[in-house]
Length: 480
Length: 86
Image (cartoon, rainbow over all chains, first blue to last red; front, side):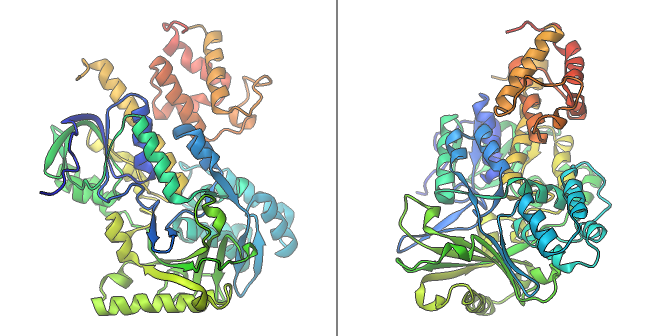
């Protein structure tokens, strides 16, 4: 008989959270801590969503998305998780760029960027200051008419090199393009510039383990391998979810599934206002990624001056569409030195990431797909050679993931690794007006993407749910 | 609660949210963001804390009322006047 992953689960909860990405886990933790009964359902066999890792024989642990979040993560983890989790967040000091236009290493904060822009790129100090102040003054409710490209043109006309320096890391961090609203760039860029780039000491596995312990301490009922099939309504209100053959009632449901999957797969458009459905259909997904994971043999090391994050490109000019092109010219390398896991085995690992279109990989035959993957690995190793000489001889393990891999593990529509474009935010926020008690928390609109964006969006939605449940409790007799 | 008691309560919440800030010199008439390092998540924390402690509901469209100490106290006074200080 198959194992019952819902064994002992109640028939009813105050809150059911679908999906254990960082947003879903954070919502669950806050609401559990506030005293609500919470059920967290994850379709995969481990928690974390895109905040994930995998192990390979020989003591190699690969992180998929660990590198590089802003300082704000410390505050958010301290408040909504635990002081212990916050204490493990440490800075990454060597952010490196190498492309035909320039080659440099920076601590990636406002002071150092001001120095670089004025001394090295010869931009007037007043212009640099005005640009930083403008970016920092942006709010998500501001006018969206201006694009990021226009913002750059206003301050640095004709300066492709400056645009490259300012834009490349943000493209890596959240998949944004020059055509996206300038506010999405300004907010994320300012978050990083305030104090630089951070990572989690101990690796993704340790973070998720600590978060799971915290969820359990806050009485959240955590269940893996529970794939929700349907969100059920009664009289326009959320009533229950269907999962692993059971129907479990809930006063509210938070979906941390991909926004489009939530609306079109879990809910069904017939439940919603026609206009809302049309708008939801128009929401553009963000791109997916390819990654190549490389583990060096035990004892093989790389000097840390090689960089923690290295934005490398052989493209002479900077165009965001080139970053998504299958003829890869740009790669971002994350170097995971032994200090990533101070208590673990001494290993050096390297992950090469490139943004990619799902459709470039989805239609390949199995044979073509395997050949493309092998080609991705070989061309990446060729490119890495510049930074890690003799990489092939020093390698213990190498493998690749594609947009199809991301879709397989996360069930995100088209393997989207950064949720949806900006318009997704309004749909995500508008869902509770369509269906009482139903909320969405997850990567939408770039600002709410990345590890910090996802956690903070989980907080915002937990606040909405708490408010709704408390209002319901005061206006009607409590249900329990 | 009286306006003075509400002000004390907000100060107490702020102390938890921004433990590194010196709140002794706070100018009630000046926006929080112009004198403290607060971001939008910090304001959300004030809202959540008020709901937790006093069951006061502040709708999202009213968040701008929390710009300064003076505007916050003025906004909360009618909502909290019937509450007893804990």
